[in-house]
Amino acid sequence: MKNFKEKLALVPTKPGSYQMKNKDGVIIYVGKAKNLKNRLKSYFTGTATGKTRALVEEIDDFEYIVTSSELESLILEITLIKKYDPKYNILLKDDKTYPYIELTNEKYPRLKIVRNTKRKKTKDHLYGPYPNVAAARKTVEMINRIYPLRKCDKLKKELCLYYHIHECLGYCVKEVDKEEIDQMKKEITSFLKGDSKEIVEKIKDEMHRASDTMNYEKALELKRMLEDIDITLRKQKIDLNKGYQFDLINYYQDENYLSVEIFFIRDGLLFGRHNEIIQTMVDPEEEVVEYLIKFYDKQGMLPKELYLPQELNQELISEYFHIRTYSPQKGKLKKLLDLAKENAKEQLDLQEETLKKDDKLRLNAINELKELLHLDSVSRMESFDNSHLFGTFYVGGMVVFEDFLPLKNEYRKFKISADVKDDLSAMKEVLYRRYYKVLMENLQKPDLIVMDGGKLQISVAKEIIDSLGLHIPIIGLVKDDSHKTSYIMNDKYEILNVKKDSNLFLFLTRIQDEVHRYAITYHRNIKSKGMLSSVLDVVPGIGEVRKKELLKKFGSLKRLKEATEEELAEVVSKDVAKNLATYLKEL
Image 1: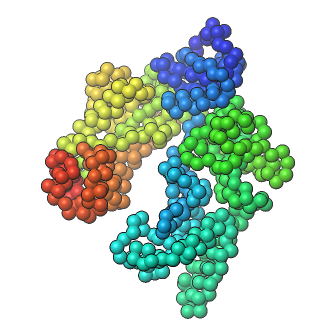
Image 2 (image 1 turned 180 degrees about the horizontal axis):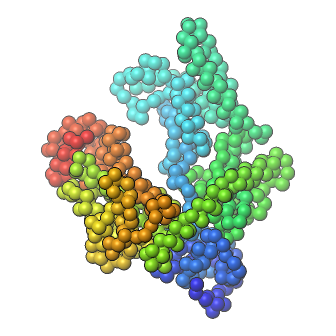
Image 3 (image 1 turned 30 degrees about the vertical axis):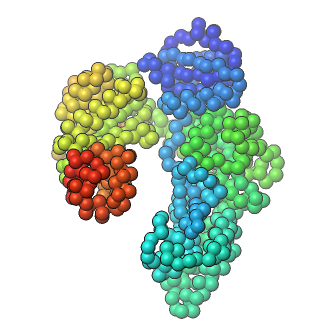
C-alpha cells in the first residue's frame, strides 16, 4: 500500500466527493464527506477489515472534488457512481424491480402488472409495490375474473372468448355505459386500497349461485378465492390510519455487514417488505443513504413520505428526494420503526454466518488464483459462450463476475454475422467486438478472461487480445468426453494444479455454467415465446429502426413467415431479407 502522508496533508477540511483509484487509474470507489481530510485519513489509519481492507489494499491513488454543501457532495457522489460504476460501491443484488398493479386510465380500462414505472407519465393509477410477484399476479387474475374489464391490448374487430365466458363486456363491438365502467373502477380501486367489502360480496353471491346450480367445482374455487383475500388482508393489517402512504426504513449493523429493511405502507396497509444485506465501507448512515438512492432510482417511483430512524440525515434525504421525511419518537409509528429494525436484525442473524463463510471461501479462492497465475489482482472476470440454431445464426453471451459474484447488469448479448458458420469464428467476432469497444470507449478491462474450452479457444482469445494491443490473462476450462470440466489451462497452454474438489475449481465452473446458461437461453426464449419482436432481435442487420418498420408492416410472426423475400426487401436490404427468410424457415 502506498504512503499518502504528504498528499493527505494537503486535503482541505471542507465537504466534497472523493474517488479512489487502482494501479490502472480505474476508479474503484466513490464516496462523500462533510470533512474530506478526516474521512480520507480514516482509510489509512487504524485497522481496516472486510471489504474496506480489500479496498485499501487496492488503492494506488485518490482524487477529490470540493463542494459548497453536503447536498452538493451527495449529488456529485451519485453522479460519479452512475458514471463509473465503481466495484466497491454498493451493488444491488437484483436487477429486477418490484411490480405494481396498474388500472389503466383509458376509455376502456385494463388491469395489468407493470415493472418499468419510469415510462408512466402518471403514477395515480399504480398500486404497490408488490414484493410478492405471485400475489400480484393472483390479484390481477382474480379481479379480471370478477370484473369484465377489457383484456386485449388493442381493440379487435370481433368478439373474443372473454366475452363469451362473461369476463369482458365486448368493448370492441358493443357500446358500454360509462357509468358501468366507472362503478367497476371505483370498486377495483377500493379493493386495491385494502377495502374488500364489495368484492367479497360479489364472490359470495357468485359462489351461492354456483352451489345452487350444483356447480360445486366452481363454488369450491370461489371459496378458496375468499380465503386467499382474507389471508392477504390479515397479513397486511396493521393498526394505522387508513390514509397513511409511506415507506418506512430502518437498519441493523454487525461488524462489516449492514441489513436494510423497508416496509411499504399504502392506505394504512403493509403492502410488503424488502430486505437486503450489504457489506459496509464507511459509516452505516452514509451507506444507507447511498443504498436508498440506488434502490428508488431502480424502482422508478418514490413514496409520498419516508419514515426514518433519527440518526439518518433527514434534511439531506428530504432535499435529495424532494419529499417529506419523518422520524417518529413515540406512538404506533415508532413501534413500527422498531419492528423494522428487529426484522433487519433477524435477517442478518439468519444469514451472517453463511455470508462470512462464503466471503472467506471466495477470498481464499481469489488468493489461490492470484498465486497460480502470478497476478497482483484477480477481481473482475469476463467469460464467453456461443449458441446457434441448426448450425446457423449464432449469438454470443458474455457474463461478468467480480470476486466470484455475478454482475448481472453487465451481462451482454451479441448478434453475430450471418456468414459465421462455426464456433471459433463466432467467438472471434464476439471477442473482437467486446474488446475493441473496451479499447475505444476506455471501459474497464477484466483482470482475467475465462474461456469455455482448451487450447483452440485460448488461442482464439489470445489472437484477438494481441491484435488489439491489450494485455489480459486468459484461462480455459477444459471439458472431458462427458462434457464435465476436467482441468484448467493457462494462456501458455499449461495445466494448472487445481484440485477438482477445491473452492477455486467450484467457483470457476460456476462461471462456466452461468455463461453457458445465459447464451443458450437466448434462442430458447425466442422460440418458446414465439414473439416477432424477439425473433427480430437475433437476426444480424436488423436494428431498432428496421425492427419497428417490420413490426409495423407485418404485425405478427405468422404474417412475417408467410412473406416472400421480395416483400421483406421492401423494408430491409436484400441480404438481410435473405438472412431473415432463412432464419424464419428454421423456427
